[in-house]
Length: 253
Image 1 (cartoon, rainbow, N blue to C red):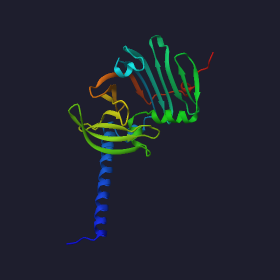
Image 2: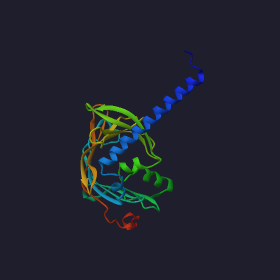
Image 3: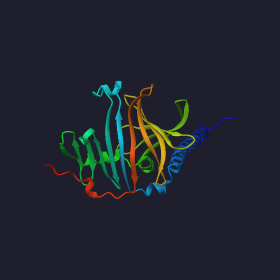
Image 4: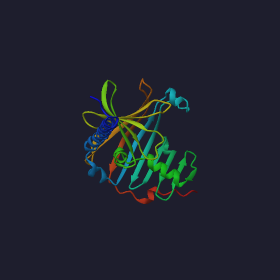
């Protein structure tokens, strides 16, 4: 029985359409399971502010040695988020000396370095800072301009995960996000096409005001999973009152 070329083309188009539809649904299912696992979309969207205090510990590694980091270093990190886009991030060394401050207050994006020098940056740089900062992963997954692609299943540490390619607006690189098949929670993320293979692992999830968040993260690199840094939360609150003045540029002496 001979098939016409038109019929064959219709069959090909049909199967391509089915494949794309299934592919899209798989990505949506992974995202939907994650959002449900952290407490649901409505609960997440009810968060208007968040303050996080943490210890940021860096470890000597072949990779960090390139930048002169050859010993264990501990910094105190503070992050403040206030929707829609006010963000404050600081790193302090022992004695509360400034290592770095970055802040967007909807009017300007400013930074302060370890020498106390204040700089005001362009509107475009401020927009990039906001795009690459986030209240949480749900914000990225819920945005319409985020690129999502289901890559199937992949093994890490002898365990199989659902994997998505994720690229948020303003990101220079796409990232692989590995989701736990049982809990639906995000296990780790790894940049795609980066010169250095690196994994950010999210551990010890806990519930804070009915929203599930990870308690600490670790950054490891290469296939041996060499530890490069650890970020441990010591205090975290959501829906707290943050005065707008806390995002203002400090007055120079």
